[in-house]
Image 1: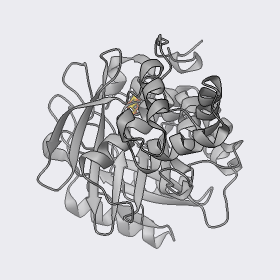
Image 2: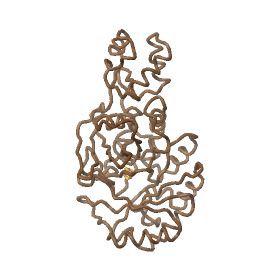
Image 3: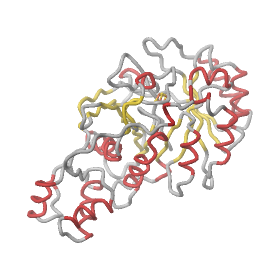
Image 4: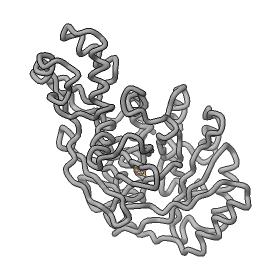
Length: 369
Ligand code: SF4
């Protein structure tokens, strides 16, 4: 049976004018070549867009006035608009971005000591249909373009006046299954990591998948790629298939085999994210099965006590149980952290991001070191 995630997601409608925002270096060089300009002008444009984060043509003072005027006449410079920002008491800020077709996605800015983590969306809606996630209940509306992915980063860093010397981590745990939009994700990754631009190290970028094995295999074929996290959330096939329909196609064993084949670099580990739902996924037996799964490939585990939200039907685990599970996993020789999602009071935490929807939810942020 063909699943929603087997089909390519719909794409953004083509625009009448070229948009420089979101083009990579070769794309910008081609754009300027079409205007009769040399290739190095494309590098200047790239640096202006991504290193200086200039958002208006008049700011591109590295280009001649005449060239700026020609660009303004013929080429758009359109990032997603930041239409709403809501700060949480814990310091996280949830942002809403309006896309060119009026659709909206969300991102979260989370400052930590000595670093900042941005949680990004990769699609409008999602095809994966996880039952605990309101984005999943929307279905898939369309992929984000590379410009719309990079634009979330540019807009959030600008909004918070983020200084270039403070490290930035990016986590694709907002709306969408990033591996269902791998082409645009990798195009954005190329731009985000380019040393002439935002220069975010690849190891500071993590994509979180629901277990889309075809996407895991395609991601593994890239020699330069983001790190991988798996949103695991259940330790039996019966249970996981109930909350994450993708498990009906690639069960836990198939998933572990795919992760075992995933070509990791020296010292790299796959992050396992495990949401603890009281009485559903938080038994000690779950802990033992989680340990057995995690030992099948180099991994580290994030335990995430559930963020309660209206209509979810789930409860957060008892603290004592969180501690007991943590001890069990550590005793099994695994690396474990307990992640307290940030932004809960503004519905920006795990399972709480959702737009254009009925009341709902969506995945979360994490901070790398
Ligand atoms: S949890 Fe992630 S993969 Fe699952 S439906 Fe929500 S956005 Fe999609």
